[in-house]
Length: 67
Image (tube, rainbow, N blue to C red):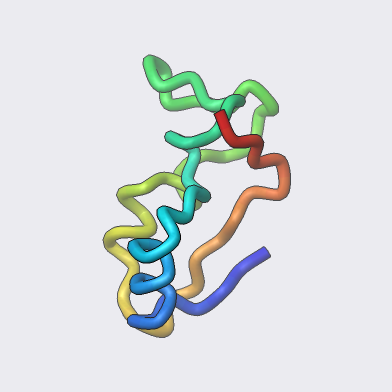
């Protein structure tokens, strides 16, 4: 799933402590920066979300499982 990055989305992340990046997922191996489910991590990393400009697409992993 994807959405367009926006100021509204950034506010919601802060207001609701929204978690969606690999670093917040139970399947993420932080030492190797790899997904145990073999999904690519680059599109889902916090850094990718933080560097996204307004109207850039950000992608959420369908296998995300909160820690």
